[in-house]
Length: 467
Image (cartoon, rainbow, N blue to C red; front, side):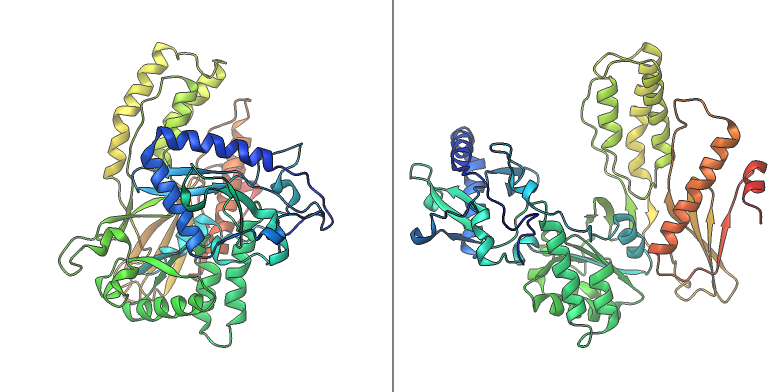
């Protein structure tokens, strides 16, 4: 795929000096941190070895058409995972110009995160995997590659002279890369509609969030077949699905062990307890098929900035614990009302409330939400209803025996605006939130819903939204 330039005739300045300056800074970091250097060199040499990078031939080093750009690069090292990610700084400016400013971002083709999570909870057998180096599987046409040049030391030896390399693939850091990669993924499904089942091509379209594949199916056999067919389909175009996990051991046995997630590779799959797994940032307990929370609160000063940092660190896209987070949001609102500066110590009264909330925060780890909307016996419900209570929505299932099962779907919570509003207006705002959540659920959920109920005790809302 071509780089989507805003103007194909663009001419950009020679920024090699900027790349050289950033390389000097990187070398200083290497000198201070040997482990960082080793991981960085290893990551870069792996990238070169896999063909994602090529050395610029001497005959092609000089171009007079103004289409050469050097991308500075730096590393993001995840200590816990012992993983180095080399990030290409396409936003770096030289003479008021950056590569990202020359690129079209393209349409947002990423599925909604909450939608993928909802579909992941539809059926009892769940599988998860991700595409290895997704962006790097989409090649850049040869005439655009000089816009993706960078400087590197041959063999990763900083004592040698810097040489010019260029990416042959779309890079992590370019504004256009997410759209290009997602287009390639969707195009793969479209091009193979006649060769694969619709369940497989639809899974490629609807069950990916960027490079993460999250799919749930009714039974183990379907999970094994779907996993194999999705893997085969994507492998045809170079997308390798790996790091597989599932809440069913039988599904694990159908997948080669070398493709399992590293957290389960060393397990005796028939005996050991399946470990928790982060799924789109949410803690998924595979053994019990439940969602939970892992609370690691960093020390922060009791200021508006510190409180906001801690509250924002609790990742809860489905709103499973929104009620527990609300007291901290109300506290922040009070501090805003007092017009305190971001780094000003909060009053003693508010400090007491904050400390009490912090003491209770680890209790969130005790909260578990069922992974699947359907419990045993509700695989084929005869009645499906959604009940909205403005701040939370629930799925009500009834089977042919008359048994009823209710599941939490999602929740949205808001604090009232600082500007005082009337009670009727606030009630109508809550009703509007419920309607918007309903539209989102109906759009994303693949379970056919027969009835929808909106609950309120406000006569204002009832008169505005009559039966």
